[in-house]
Image (cartoon, rainbow over all chains, first blue to last red; front, side):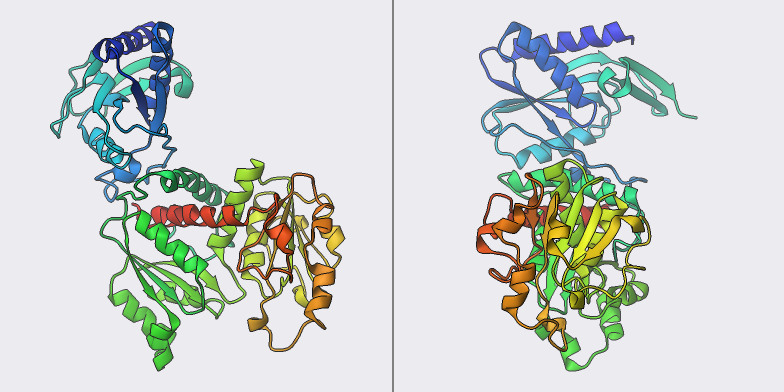
Length: 170
Length: 309
């Protein structure tokens, strides 16, 4: 997927979030790292139509179920959740939905911040292969992938360009 | 972090120090949540093995462990078998057999945590050993300074007080010079170490000593005051507390010699009216309570980096 496609897809996802949450105050929470610039861009898009939603960041590494298994220790980045998300409609934003374990960890993290009215999920790419009963509400692109493939999302803010690459690991 | 134990600042590289500080920055936020707890170290055991009086450091480690969901057990001097004649080595073996993942050790003998670390498969954190090192204190001080000043390199830091007996001064001198701060150690000649050589292994040129407080404070970005450790002195090192206070007490007038946005620090416990005037300890430049909050974040970071993978 090219740079223009990534931008247009994020715009479409932002529009879908507005459409599905008419009359409600949504909060966009980007999952570290690439969910963070995604949430920022979607919020900016929504801000052109109506009041820009509050945004925040969520680092899920402290909630991982595989901390003892990962080879290298994950870097814990900042979690910054807007003051009060009790009773709000929260949209989690992440780049790739794969096994669903990141989202499980994110849901557990969110429970410590109160009781949201709804928690929704927006992902740029759904590549299948779920290991948990988790689905996204807003999907930019569905990709049929193989287990030995890696989906790499690149965003200008972090990687210097927008792109989605699928690569086979040998 | 790839090391097994955290025994001192001496063996830490610049990158490792920054990794701990960056991680601590991320952990700060947990203290602001309605539920101040994450499940990261669920099922791990942390033993606080403090053979020297401590409230602040022990409590700080206990809170840090509990916020990460570890099971934290405290052993205090009166409750420990050392008072019943057990040797340090036997205690270490006993602790090891309990299979705690991490033991925090405070001991009045320099090197005690290092001895236990060699005998134990548990991860050992030095919570202060004699007049040698107190690594988590130096890390929390560095975090506090970085949060206020945005950097550590190029700062002038004055550490004033009982330098000779202070593991806090030693660990801070090591850490801050590694990261490019100019460190002035200041105290009465009898309270300064006989030589600065060997105190730091790199950037020796950034370490200075003086017995003139004005020289240490002149244009300083950070003033760190230390308590006089009477308990480590076998004989008096100065004529009277009043005289000490006149030459080395931090008053508002003295603070004015430092930079206009100076911060005043103290590892605690503070002795008001001795090394620091009340109006300074409670004044606008004081970050003494910020240090306490930073302490919990730094100790969470250390426990996570040692135990989290």
